[in-house]
Each structure stands twice: as C-alpha cells, then as structure tokens.
Length: 151
Length: 169
Image 1: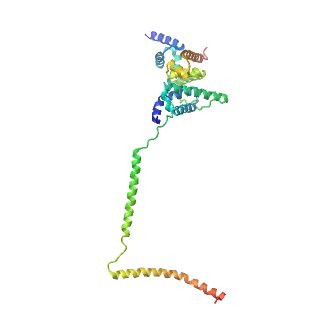
Image 2: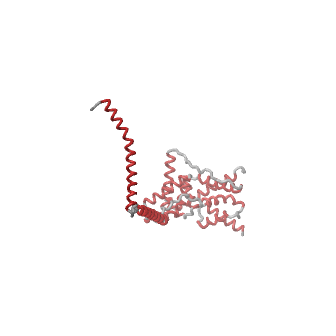
Image 3: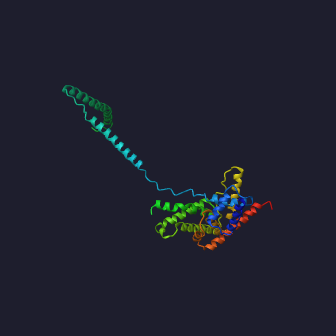
C-alpha cells in the first residue's frame, strides 16, 4: 500500500515537472509533502511544497480602513450635554434675577428715614474724602499768583 | 458604487495582488504601494467595472503590468531594489531554523527565475489558478503557460538538487 502510494506520488511528480498535472493532482502532491509521512528519497521536494504552502499565508497588512461611521451614541451625548448646559444657565439666571427683586424696601417710614440718612451720609463722607485731596491744589494756585502777580 | 461596495468587491483578491507584487518587486513596502496603486486604478474606473468578465483577472493583469513597469524603470535608472525585509526570521528550535532555511533556499531559487516564470509559478502554485486563467492574466496562450511552468519547476528542481548535494558530491 505504502509502496503503491509512493509510486503514485513519483508518477505525479514526473507529470508535475512536465506541467501536466491538474490543480487537483497538485493538491494531492502538496498534501503528501506537507504530511510527516514522506518517502526518504523524496524528502528534498518537501521544502518546495512547504514553501508554496507558507507563501499562501502572506497577507497584505494594511487593509483599507472602513469609513468611520459617526456613532449615534456620541451625538446623543452631545445633545444631552448642551441641554444640561442650557438648563444650568437658565437656573442660575433665574436665581440672580429673583435676588434683584428685593430692593431693600421698608414698611416703617421712620426706619426708612434713618436708613436713607445713613446712606446719604455715607455718600457725602466719601465725597468729602475726595475733596480733601483736592484742597492742596488751591495752595499751588496761591503760590502761582504770588510769583506772576496776575491780579 | 459606494466605498463599501467597492471594498467588498476588491477585498477578496487584494492579498493575491499583494503576493504577486511582492514576488516581482521583493520589497514588502513596494508591494504594498503596488497594491494600493492597483486599487486606486480600479476605483478610478469603478463605474465600468461591470463591463469586465472577471474583475480579478483584470486586477491581476494590471498588477503584472504595473510591477513590470516598475522593474523596467528601476533598471533603466540603475537603481537596485531596496528593501528592508531581508531577514526577519525569529530564532527558534534548530529544526524550525533548518526548515526555514530550506524554505529560504526555495525562495532564493525562485527569485533567480525570469519574471514571467516567477509570475506563472506564483499564480499556479500559490494562488492555484487554472491554466486558462493564468493565460488570461498574463496575456499568453495556455500551451505557452504550460511550457513555461514546466521549465520553471524544472529549473527550481535543478537548483535545489545542486543545493542539497553541495559538499557531498
């Protein structure tokens, strides 16, 4: 049986080198030489078929990347983020505007009078503070008149 | 034709194109360039692709022509092939190294063949095409393919016999 097989392979090989084998027969040959059970006098051919088999596995590594599809999840996250942002802004705006409604009104006219005086006093004190720093300018004016005697 | 359709149409034989280009141009980078170039060419005529009987055969013929052109222009300008994939074998068991070594020998023998025989061997042994298909791709008749194939196989065998008997006889 083994002898017959070897003979068959030898025959195939002969026709193989004449270019007369079919693809099917070449597959048989390859299968035979890729197995561990190769007749010793034919072992040299096995590297040939091994090489062909190994070359079949080479693949181009850089396949064309598919066009990146926009993920709907990401879009929805964006929409949600914008919504949250607007809600936050609206909320803070509402709070500040409600604070502005309290103008510090008083129901009792006397207390209102006192508070108003306090406020006016504060203003006038600050105005006088400003005036004090301007007074020395007058000094400058006097000395100028002494020198130039314009009057 | 959309990009997706085009990719699904061409993807099945891109590896074959790459292998054929690599066989002829040796360098992996150049082979990748060639494959890309062919794909670009196919894309540019994507609207009349359906007119061709076999897209794969067309692509293989284009690859062949492109690579031969590349080789011709290289030789004309006296540039040698520059490639960085000389040796990327990983160290391993002794047996594995020996195996690889003998496979490399086959590769070397195959690289010494003329371009046409290289292509025929590539298409027949590695890609498993019928003679008629090879004839179509290489624009030859079937008998010529058969004869060239036989010649290529025999010359590889002779080179290998020399190798195996080296130092013994």
